[in-house]
Length: 182
Image 1 (tube, rainbow, N blue to C red):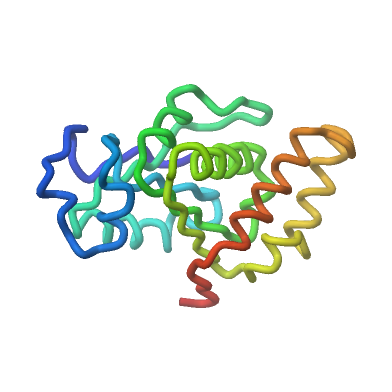
Image 2 (cartoon, one colour):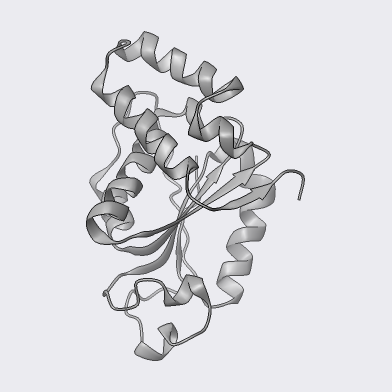
């Protein structure tokens, strides 16, 4: 379960809203987008602590943020509305937490985010919350265990799992924030 929320109710942005020195606000300012930031996260790991603080800080700065709240059922496909929200965002912040890779839904999101990075110029900021970036880049520990589980479910040579691994490797190779216990 996640929380759908946004810092402001309208989806129209004034040009002045993006004329700032903040890298979050300035990224991809030449494109018309509905959201400044799309947050990707594993709700059970960060919902009641870190995520709320991050969202509040973004909202306080006037950054229009998309957070999905629909309850997700096992095996459910990423919805067209969620895909559109990713496509309509200027920036994606992916909060990698200990169980992020265990969720097929989260892996579908990260795959779509990285696709939009390549095809649409989406700016991506990985945030490693109590997870070593190396664990995401080359699955180790919990991430390796999660990927083995996905391989068992979808098949070792599954194209889906291969795409997820590539997306994790690519985003894990980006410069981001490594937050151990902060």
